[in-house]
Image 1 (cartoon, rainbow, N blue to C red):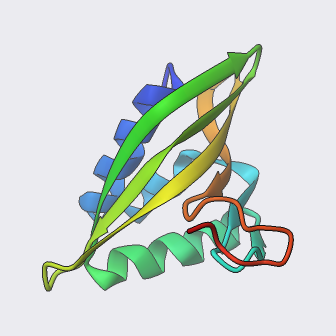
Image 2: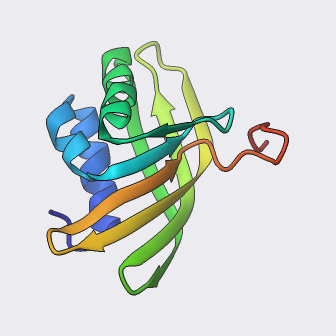
Image 3: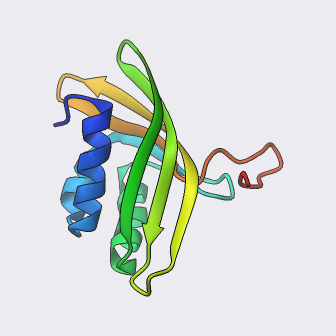
Length: 126
């Protein structure tokens, strides 16, 4: 298990890029949430696994850049960017917000908003 949120981000990107769904899902808390671009939440490890499976099946590679990280006790929050590179060479970069939690097993992903947090009307940030 990761010993820091930075290490977890690097390991997560590597697992996705290697197509290792099991390793990628293991980095998430059991009650984790992914916030979709439209603001809908996919909650729980099974929902996270489904989203990650779709990402891996798309053949895209992932690059994560952490711009800022704030840690308080067993929780950390990071902002940065997520870049998806599709097999056809097109790429998409978005601002991201990630919440990490630390347990006895190390750091895990708790909440991920890979497209940023939507506005109150549900629109993704521009």
